[in-house]
Image (cartoon, rainbow, N blue to C red; front, side, top):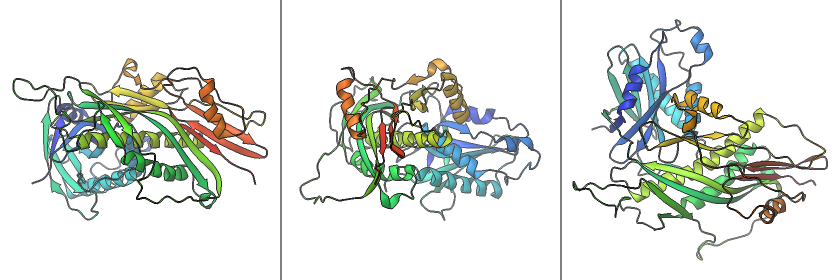
Length: 454
C-alpha cells in the first residue's frame, strides 16, 4: 500500500483554476509536511514562466521537451528559503490537457529528483534514517480533472513509481501548532590559506557546518520544560468532552541550550592554522516552526525548530553573498568603515491557516517589492498589511579601532542599555593597500571578515 497524502481543499481548487493559456503544460511545487503515517500538503505553487517560454507556446502541444529543469530547480531553491521549520517541498506537479502517459511520468521523475538534489546542496542538515524519503509527483489533467499520484524514494536513484492516495480535507492547517525561538549566535569561522581557492560562500558554509553540530546536539526547552522526545507534544493539554486534545494556545516557546565544553571523555587538542582571514557571525536570530496537530511528537517539534535555526542562518548568509556579487561595492579609500542594511525576516500568513511563510527584506526594499516577490514565487495573493516583520532595525555604534574583533565587542558599552531586537550591519574596513574586512550582521546575525597583510 502506498503513502497517503492529506491535502488542503484549497490546493485542489488552485490546481483546477490554473489556465494553461495555450501552453503545453504548467509545472510547480507541492509544499507541506511529512509524518510517519501520512503526509500533509497545505500549498501548491506553479513555477513562473520564462519570457522565452511564453514567446512560442505553439512549438509543442503535447511534448514536454521544453520543460526547463534548471529554471524549475531554481524556483524550488527560492521557495525553500520561504518555508519555516517543519515545511518542505514535498514534490512536484504538472498540469496538461492530456491524461497520464509515459512521457509525463518520466518528466515528473526527472524533475522530482533534480529538485531534491538541488535543495540538498544548500542544507546544513541531513535527513535521519527514520524519516520518510518518498517524494510525490502529481499529474493533473485539466480536461478530465483526473489526478495521477505517484511517489519515488529520493534516496534510491533507481526507485520505481509507487501509487499513492490523494485525499482532500477542509481546514487542514487551521489548527497547526507553532513554535517560536530566539537564538543568540557567536560563530567564528577561520578562512585557511589552504582554502583560498574556495568561494567565500563555501568557506562560510564549512564553518557553519561545525556550528550546526552544536545546534543538533543542543537541549531544547519547550515552555521552559525538557520533555521526553517520544512524548506527545500536547501532553497535559485540556481535553474536550469528546476526548480530543484541545491546544488552546497554538504557540510554544522554545529555548536552546548548547554545550560550551566537551565531555571529559573527549580529548581536545589545539590546532595552529595559517589564515588569510576570518568570518564572525554574531547576533540574535528569530526562528519559527510549525507542526501538524494530529498527535505530534516532541521529537518532531524539536527537529522542525532545529532545521529552521540552521536554514535561516545559512539562507541569510547566502542572500548576502548573492547581493554582494550582484552589486559590487566600490572601495572608499577615505573611509575605514561602511554600514549597509541587510535583510531581515518577514512573515506572511497563509489564508485560512495558522501557518506563516517567510521571506527576507533588505533595508532599501519597499513593502510592495516584498509583496510582489511572494506573488511571483508562491503565486499567493497577499496584502501589504499582511506582512509581519519579525525583527526591527536597531542602530549599532562601532568603534573606529582597526581591530575588527574589538570593534564588534566594544559596541556593547556604547549602545543604549535596552534589548536589541536586531542588528543588521555590513561593515567594510580597509588596510593599507588592501581591504581589511567585511563585517556583516544579517538580521540579527553579524558577519565580519578580516584580512591580514604579510
